[in-house]
Image (cartoon, rainbow, N blue to C red; front, side, top):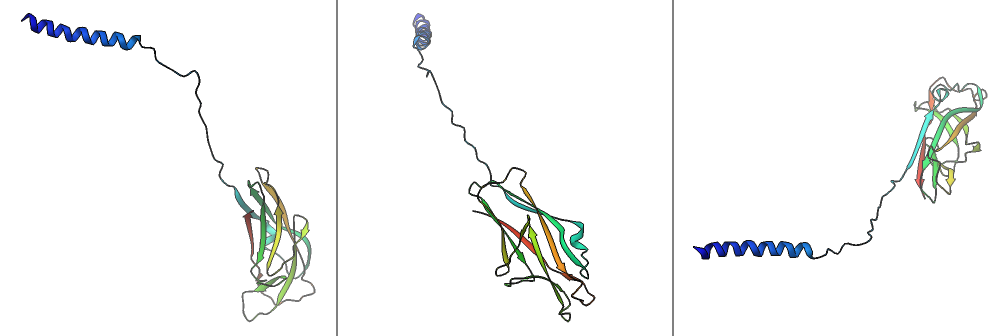
Length: 173
């Protein structure tokens, strides 16, 4: 019976000795450490076209000069910059903007000109490069006026509704 108690005590003594030994061994902690933080910034590349009330109620029977029809806000965080192009649905691959009727029997058209941000817009093959930026925009973007001019009084068009659709496209460099 003493043997069993001695054996049980022996295990307890060995376990206590092992715990003391583990506590006595110094731990080797570093004196400094590093943490690398990483993150990303998503690309911002957008264009917002805000039509003015005049855009949907143009009187094509009068002359109009530099009428504000829209404000366009360009936003990009691309370091090398971006471009903005403008296409006219009616111009196709031509070099002139014009209004036309949806009525295929009405062949009347009215040419018009545009200025964007104070510069004349020139179509080449139905498309105009209207912005060629070499840097990012401010966080709020850059807003430019789109203005239209036409000579409707001299045209004497058929009574009808006339339209053209303009498409603005922003592209990263």
